[in-house]
Image 1 (cartoon, rainbow, N blue to C red):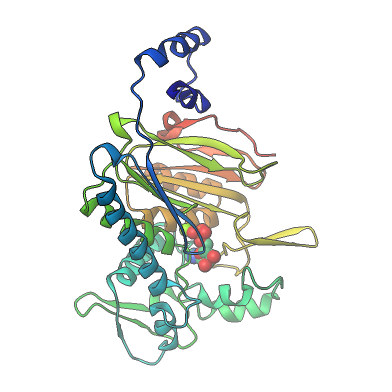
Image 2: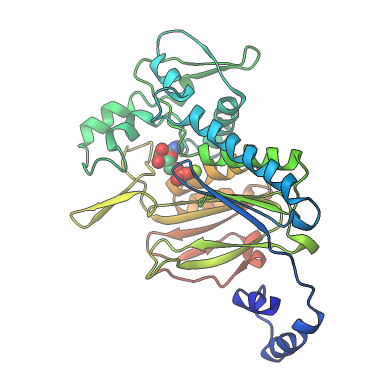
Length: 354
Ligand code: AMP
Ligand code: MG
């Protein structure tokens, strides 16, 4: 019954007569598509899913032999980058801050810092991998305390991305100031998704999607060149799952950052986990930002975090200049904004989130 699926999320809104015709004709001409292989694990503090339509090209055993190491690779990224794990490379670098010792780092750490620096530059410092001293004070998920301004001001003095010293020949990193703390929470999922995709591609998978809720990467389209349909979560759903739109993705990455992913409400105000490096307080003027790009998932992940901080006007102006990249921005009033290049890939967009 493949036509049922086809009408759950229509690609375009066909005229009603065409719709009825398709409904009648579809079952007769419809080649049954084999069910995809779907595997899920709890990793990186979220549910990670690998979905593959390579089932008719490759044997189930080949697929399983690719999927398990891909999850394993993501676990390695998590172990290396997670600031809350005392044994991680991030924690080691943080302990060495200001001591003059450089640490030889893994390719994952290098990739994370390299992409972070690139996105930090693009966003004028809105994405800031050295935000650790401030995120440590807020302790999202654990504390419900709103820190006073002077405490945040003091912490901001140690937020110095210019003091992340990378030696590309020796592959070492050093944090040049005592009290500095890296926090790669804004890019780690993207790095993990990229690494999983590398493993899957090396093992011959093509029509495959890796998704860790907020970060997604398509290795290629579904069989026959059909796009994957990726829902954009509503930042204020009346019931779950609530979507504000659906994006077509054939190849590339998507990332969403939102004020609804980790937050608490105090005295009627929402305090969330994406912090403005200028003030130390949660970024205002947005509910969510979704980036769609032909570039890496790491780039998409860092960029969506940075755009959230920049605010709608500056964020959308930047996106319009970036090749192969588009965005859907939900502003503080719930209004949705779509970059020019994305309009024909987006369906069922809600104009205002209430
Ligand atoms: P994401 O969900 O990818 O937007 O990332 C949010 C996470 O990134 C937070 O939980 C922090 O760990 C970290 N973070 C918060 N503010 C920033 C910022 N301005 N730049 C970079 N990382 C940040
Ligand atoms: Mg991010």
